[in-house]
Image 1 (tube, rainbow, N blue to C red):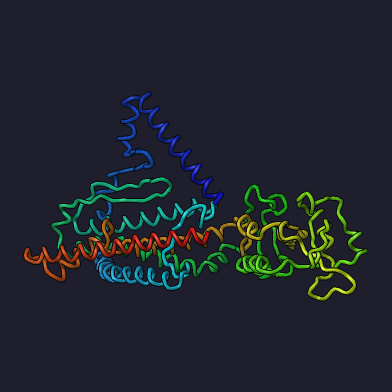
Image 2 (cartoon, rainbow, N blue to C red):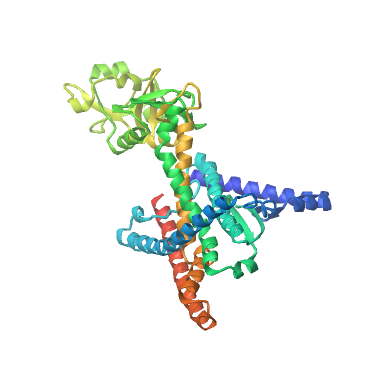
Length: 467
């Protein structure tokens, strides 16, 4: 939650600065500042910054040849069929999710999970997440614009905007021209955004699957028995002890043979009782530290508080030397089992390519502040594999979520227009059927809107009760 409070403070400071600067420049520069914003299509309102342009209104299909146009028409016909199918599937998915979460009372059944920076999104992933969200939105709107251009519907403009911290894209179509299109043509236009998001998701999934081959071609070497450190978050206790490019081979007795096993080892350490070591009276006197860490709560590699198995005795011992003693699971003869005091945290030894580093604290801290990779390169940035993998995963999840969400036949979503057009195709466009179509459409949209609201509320409850 500390990251969330920091993020909220930064967002508040950002928007206060933007609005204060906007007011000051408007008063000082009078018409020149307003003219500059208007000429460049920039609008600033409270917690929103918007950029609008007409630059792309007539360039989307102007230079396309007839063969390319025929391909695109077939492309969007496929998108129309898929969009109708996605509309039905999205409602079923929301129904299944809502019912499942009530039956199981766990977040595992929650297919669509809200992403809240600082809660379930680490601070160092906020920027990649928002950039990917913007790209997914742009590709979604590009689908609408391209399909509309193919059917002769002009654009009034397009652009992007930032609301609080969330970016989005939009296109403005000529609604009068849109109404004159046939129902099938309108269906192609309305389904194009969902279709493009699904195609983007599928493309990212393919690239994610072949990523190891791509990295191999770029000269990256996959590490079979270790991971390489790509970054350590500033302020971490390991910041000056683990260097960029260092290799980690083991955490305590757990061998690290990949990025996934790095997390598994930390999870195993967190779940188990701290490893104990057998110490005789002679060894205790030899390893006694001069630091009174048990009394004063001081934690360091030269003085860590250990407690006997019966918790009757606490000793401040030299941690590095304790690790060389026999472990308790092998049996202690004529000696006593001592474990790191849990209030001080876990004692974790990190075996690296240079030496053994000791960490005392919560294993979650290591997981959140140290980025590791399965790959190493002497030419390119070692963090590139993680960055590409994260980007593809975000594209897959965000594009898929946008496709499902926009396909729902609820108010103000693409699914609303898909439903209205589909009913016109099925029931006909005659005036006598318009009243029935409108009533049926309104009932379905009210039901779908309530279903979305229930899923969102339930998801936020599950999120904050989990974290």
